[in-house]
Image (tube, rainbow, N blue to C red; front, side, top):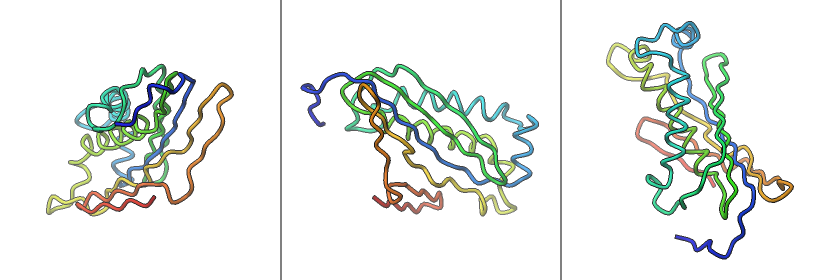
Length: 167
């Protein structure tokens, strides 16, 4: 683990985003509250918050950080739901991993809650995918100096047991 003991506590913020591709029928069920397992977006929001708090337990070299604020929002588009997570702290290291973990947990929770609607006749998910998980913005310091990732710093995850990471 990297030694951060000599670093100063400063305000920090990270915002991450990701998408889940779903059928229009499934998205309509989410909008109208007709999903058997319950309120999909409310459950995904809680999952994101819980995952953010547990990030150091699941990412081995991630420091424990006092989280001061979490915001989880969803945007519903045509065939896609985006999760946007913002995490704040005043600490010695950033909260990018917490924001990415929150987005991932939110999207996985959505998938879990609607998987019965997304399955085809053979029990597979030919059109469902989680994609474009990335840090949108990282801010730090007294005046929040903006540090934005390059386009190649997104992580594309295909849940057909293949994974591609471009850094």
